[in-house]
Image (cartoon, rainbow, N blue to C red; front, top):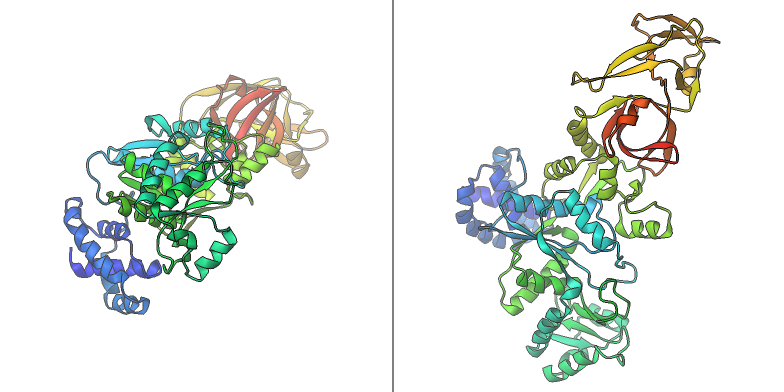
Length: 551
C-alpha cells in the first residue's frame, strides 16, 4: 500500500484526536481500504514511522498536509464489515476481563468486555477473568454480591473465560514485591505531604521534599505504612515521573495508599492497597496479557502502565482504547453502577436485575437475547470516537432474533366484560401460534372481555373481535355477523388470567391474558399482540408475571 495513502489516513486520525494519531486505528482504516491481512506485518513498521512523524507536527501543519492528501482518503474508503483487525496478533493471544465488583455489569461496560471476548474468539485466544477487587474508594465500594453476579453475567453472554477466576485481593504480596523493587531502584518514594500540599506542588511543577530521601530511607518509610502508627491519609507511595511533565495528571502518580476499610474477601488482612494502574502494570505482565481493550477514560492509566513497564524493561501488551458509548431512549434512566448500587442497597430497586439498572441480568430477564447483545456490540464496532446509540438499535436486532419463534397471545389492560345481545353459542377459534409456522392453538370464546379504552373509543361503532366475529358496541353490544369486514379490529380475552407486565421504567401494567399462557414454559419469550414482546417470568400471588422486552 502506498505511503501517501498511509500518510493521509494517519493525518486524518491525528486531526480527529487532538493531534495524536493512533497506530491501531490507522491500520484499521487501511484494512477497510483494502490492505490484505498477510501484508499487515510488513506495513506496521511503516505506519509506526509515519505516525511518529505526524504526532511531532503542530496541528496547523497536520491540517495543511491533510488538505493536500484528503482526496486519497475519499477515493479509497470502503465500508468496513465486522470488527477491524488488531495489530501484532500472534498465535493464541491473551485478553483479560477486568471488572471492578461494585455491582452487576450493565450494557455500557459489558460492551468493552464483549469486545475482548469476541476478539479472543476471532483469533483463537484466551480470556482471563480477573476480579479487580483492590479496596476502591468510599464513593465506589465493593459489594459481596458482585463476586457471583459478574461470572454469572459472563456465562449469560457465553463468554468462555479461563478457570480459575483470579482475584486481585489474593495478589497483594506480588504487588508489594514489585513496589519494593521500584523503591530500591530509586523509581518510587513515600510521600507524607497532604493532598492539598502536593496538589500545589504539582501545579507549580516542584518536586516534593520526600522525593529526595535515599532508597534505604524510603524502604523504612514504606514499611511504616503497614503499621497502625501511620494514619490513613498520612502517607502514600508515589511513582517518580517528571514534575515538569506537560500533563499535571501524570506528575508523580500515587501507586499505593492506606485504607482500613474491611474488604469483603480478605477482611482487614491488608491496609496498604495498590492503585488500579500499578496492579494492572504488574498483572498484565505476570498473567501474559497480549492485548488490552479498554475505555478511553483510562488513557492516563495506560500511560502510567507503559511508564512502569519501561522501568521493569517488560514487553508492552497492545492497548486499544474504545470510545465511550451513551445510550439514547432509556426513558430518562442513567446507566451507572454506582447509582444502581445506591438504589439496590436502599431497596428502591428490586435487585440488580431491576430493569432500571440496565444490567445484563435485567436485559436477559426482559427477553433481550445474548445473541442480540453480541451482534449489537459487533455492529457498533471498535472505535476511539465517543458514540451515541439509540436503544432501538438493540431492540431491532433482538426483534429479528425472536420474532419467528415467539408465540402470539392476547393481552388487554383495564378489562371490562361485555354482555352481547344475540351472541352465538361458544365459538371455537383456531389461531396460529406464529404467522411463520403452521402450529395452532384453540380458543373457545364464551365470556368476552375487552379493554375499557376500546369500549369507550369505539362506542356505537361496529368493530371486529380479532379472528372471531363482529359487534356493534351499542348498549348492550350486538352481534352483527362472522364476515371479516374492513372495520376496526380489537383485542379480546375469553378465559381471562390475571396478568401483569414489568416495564423498563420499573412499573407494572396489569390486565388479563388469554388462558393460552398457562402452557408457557418459564422464561419463554412470547408476543402479546399489539402490546409487545415479553418474557414469562413466574406465577406469583395469583398473577402470571411477564417482563416487557420491546415492541
